Length: 232
Image (cartoon, helix red, strand yellow):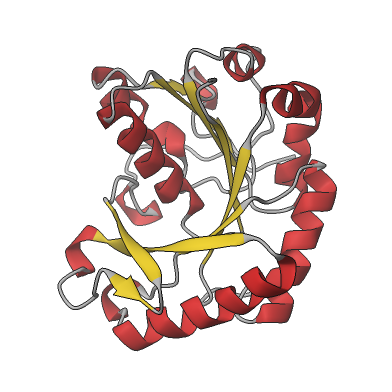
């Protein structure tokens, strides 16, 4: 059986990069050889490439722009990405930009992705614009599927307000996403909580299971001495 190829998509601010990073870490801890590919050409701040050195020490390969373009907001795609998609001996996580222009980066890999088989996880924070209700989530879902030419296979609830997150906030997000899951017939079993906010959040809410995310990415104001080039 082939190792998994998992594509992670989500709107701006959904937490998809943190989820991608944690997913790579989880599979690595299970003894899998893991490649994490940063295909996010949309968000110049919260990117999986920021943890490259840390993950390399753990044996996780991170494919992302390097050198002077490491923090550039530019659509520069390494030829190593195709090699990763075609490398069935590794578990591969693709962290993809959260709008149509981000999903278009998948176009050149679609044939090989479908040949290999894939999962596509749609990470949703209902406390962010454009995904705050069922209609907004469904509209974005359809748009991202149409642009990527791939189908979402699982919905992930990452509803949060950081330190202001409560049980009620997460439960409300779960209920909204569950309505989408039923309407679109898409798997939905998991909700996320950052590790330092788990004390008051139970393991199960409305039949959904908690997974804990560990915080790896810096905020923009924490990223000293890094130059960000605007996209063209």
